[in-house]
Structures are given as structure tokens and as C-alpha cells.
Length: 305
Image 1 (cartoon, rainbow, N blue to C red):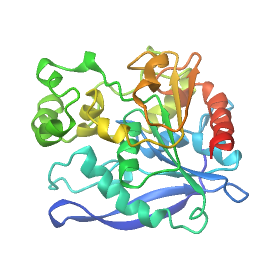
Image 2: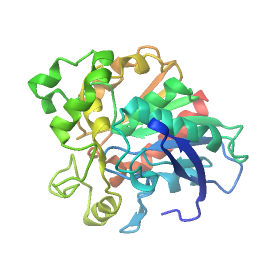
Image 3: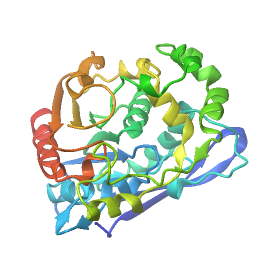
């Protein structure tokens, strides 16, 4: 695990006059950065999913590996999660409103002199991939990297009243609050299941050490983000704004659409590089496949950016 982060902090204006401080962690390589990976975690994880650390003499940290390959890495929690907590009295907000808060902070964070002039790559895991896609519509990245994330939704997790919102992004945006509270009971929830399980390849890790690392980064779930990411077509307008090079990766035992179908929705991307991670589940950083994944991402950056 990398421990020598530069902590970035700024004040963000939320809804109804609320203000709060948002923070991010910036990790720099030993030499001038080739690019910056701005990273957003999946639902129920803190930003440290991208900096899991070491277990059983193996490095499971995306941040550590990418810094070692010469890239800068910035990790940031979603609004209301981890280090970016929001007062419980704050009104309900949708994922689009959430990323508008994040974008406020990024306009300042991206001006840091060590990264101001480098290419920025929006990087998201699972629900975080949707959040990166939404951020990209507000302040475009130079490249997009989606890991265990696509626009196909999870039809099998929906109830009948949710199905009417498939491919209806505007209708969903207006009516989301009631359905999020129906399904999840609160805007932010803790998983009752206890998080990742070693009994499941899809939801677990490759060994006990990696599983322990995953458990350390568990956090509350941004319910609206979880809900919206499950509904196919809920962020179609933003998906269509991905016009830059796109890297996608999915575990052999990942969630959602079959891995080979993941790229089909990104019809406007300048190029698409897809990688299946043998033996990996949804938490692909908790598998040894992270090594080949990071090397492939580094090669991709050199080819397209």
C-alpha cells in the first residue's frame, strides 16, 4: 500500500446552501508523471479499493502498480462516502447531482502543478465506472478506463416497477428518490451481508489475505448510485458522450453482461481496448490478474494518448 499521498482539500457547494470539504489523495511516481488516473470506487467501497496494499507477498494496489509504471494516481470518495461524508440532514441527491459536487473539487485538484499538464484518465470500478462516465459529460477526460463496469445494467436485480425506467434516463432522474428509498430504505446503507465472501469468486477474492484487504475498504453504499447503475440505459446520454479512447476490463467471473458484450454500448468511443481477466471475479484488484491488467493499461496509454 502506498502511504505517501498528497492530500488535496477544497470546499464544495452542495444543495440548498450546504457546504462541505471534499478531499482526494494524490500519489506521484518518482519521475514526472506520464498521465493521471483519476479513480472512483464501486458501491460499498472507499477510494482505497484502488490502494488495497499487499498480502501474501503480492501487491494488490492499483495505485502502487501504476505509480511504479510512471503514472500519477488520484483517489477520491463519492459524495457522502468515506472521507467525503455529508451531513445527514442534506437533501436526497441523484448520481448526476453527486458528480456535479465532485467536478467542483476536480477543477481545483487537477490544477496541482505536478499533474496540471498531463493527460487525465477517468477510471472507475463497478458503480464507479458510471460515476466516471457522468463526470466525463461535465469535464471530459482524455481517456476512460472502466473495470468491471459497463452500461448494460443488471436486469436480474430489478423488480417490475423498476423495469419501466429501462432506457428512460430523464424519467428516472425525476422519479428516482421514491424508488431508491423503496429498494434500499435510505440514501446511504451499510451492507448487512458483511461484504465480500471467500465462498464466491464473483464477489470475493483469490485468497484469505486479499479478502482481508477487501474487507478493510468496505463503506456505506450510495444507494442512488447503486440503483441507477442497475438500470440499463439510465445514463445513455453520458455513455454517448464518450468520444475518447476507452479501455475496458472484466473478470472471467464478473457481474452483468457477458464480458465480450461489455463494449457494445460505447458506440462513439474513438477506440476500444477490451481485456478479460482470467480467473478474476468482480473485485478484480483482489486477484493476481491485477498485474497483467496494470501492464496492459500502461501499454494502452502509450498507444492511444
